Image (cartoon, rainbow, N blue to C red):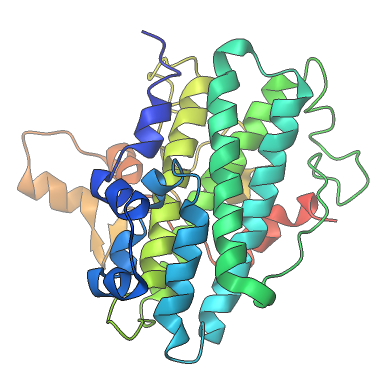
Length: 298
């Protein structure tokens, strides 16, 4: 079986109920009664052509009765929008470059479409408050075009392109997780936390992207920790990407070191630092993420 293909349904088929909600006639009252947040299953919604429009409308409806999106939500969504614009443009250029092998083409096209839908959703939700799309330098040269990843869209550059894709996806996963606590206080008049659920739904899609890209880089060997679908400690072979993986060696969660905890709970299993770090993605702060992507923004 082609191991590239499971990504396509896996990225999309996570909430059949959502498809029904988005494709069936739905009044605003019914949408809010059902819970705007409950309708934000982006992993599935991205397969529905009108989903970004529908979800953005629900977002505006949810917060419209309380004076619009809170300033903190606008700030975080604009931060996310910059990252999504970066990824969307990256995959557009990758697909158009002609260097993506046929075996990987469907995956790249699917991820491109997902990132475009994320951008559309955020822009429609933010409306006039959305930031402008930046200009990007995917060589990582701050506009010089001569950064450390020069030639990534040229013949012979596919290895570099894949390395940059992995760094972007792993950064995105940690970025969304880092902003989740800041979104917790914001609820619409129906009591649903649309902003948090929307962010975490996008986070889950980015995590699937990251796992697939990592596995593709390792030809699905699943034996080398550099290329498994998860991150082991803070190891990486992507040049200049140490900041992307900084802190991933952490084993303490909610104030508890999970390694000795698991040794007590399951002495029959060898659950050491590697296994614990593989089980959790660590959050990155907004400042840390912006420092990582700064070389790619002109």
